[in-house]
Length: 248
Length: 226
Image (cartoon, rainbow over the protein chains, first blue to last red):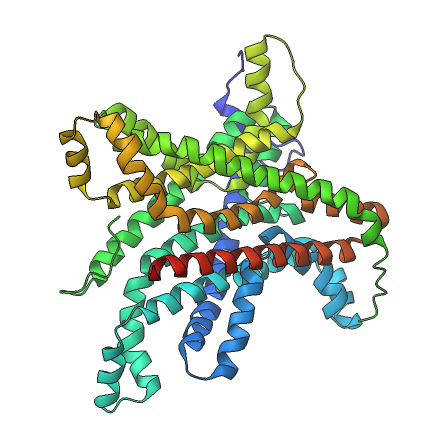
């Protein structure tokens, strides 16, 4: 293979003259991080709420949560993305709001759609992890909290959830890394996140290998850094006498 | 909501959609068979006492587990035609399908490697010693004693992963392969009926994955009691 390697290609001015290719890659990385973090905040807030609701005795609360989890876990992410982008505005929004969406800047609409879609998708998974973490608590812990006079809210807030969070920290870390990787799917609705940017730079410069290698390296670095930081956090939060963390 | 549905596009589209579904299922089957085979090799490499083998397998796994599947698909879309042309010594145009198959096998193998490694490590060390005491070589012990048990331990994980892989096969959309979602997209765009086609595709995916997850749960809970 006689491929002409040129790592300086990122310093060249872009085809439209307005920027440099390195900046395109960086902006793609920034968009990936932005979407991942925003979707994660949504997923965590909704997922924890749903996960707690699933462990409560009320059937009226549990049934909708089970439905939510099954629907969002059993439909491919790309189909969900197309639903929120192409179908939901037509079927779910009133005509005036539809016009507002059409008038808004397309990148803004695409970004918000991506965040909503990834957030709702990931919330179903977070819900299941949180539920598993709560159900892993020995029954005696609930009973002990009640015996001490704590209400159910207080028992969750001060006893069950702090313990459950230590158990679910490792699986939640991998859920975060999943949402980070899943952001690549949003290129299907036209967003120029990291993967799309690397293809674009590759196509405009003819140096697709350099562009893909940089993208791969950026994903790799984020995964390593997040994984490392979360393991340190696990160790710091570990309680003496409890094996809460993972063996990784 | 004032959208006029026209569901009559679906029956006409069924033969093409069925072809797409066949391709999605083929991708799943190849990912499982190829991914497990390569995954077992990688797991044995990672557990080997040879530091080079263990290091190479470890690097492979951490790279593939940190990049998005979409990026892996693009990598193989780029590399597979190049490698085939280089091997055959002449430019060989091949469809994106082969790249998709290669990408799934390589990508899922990294996951299966970790699962199988955990499975092997869950088997008590005494079993290896016992097998060796009976005169089996290390290879024979792994092949006839450890691996069969390890694979049985991780079967529930592999089955639930299969459902996720089936959903992920839809990502070949990004290189315009006509899997089930790709077929639905093409018909939807041709007939300007994307809404009907995507709702139908979503329903089919849901029914298949929901049924499959029920089956896996049922099978797993039975195993625990037995």
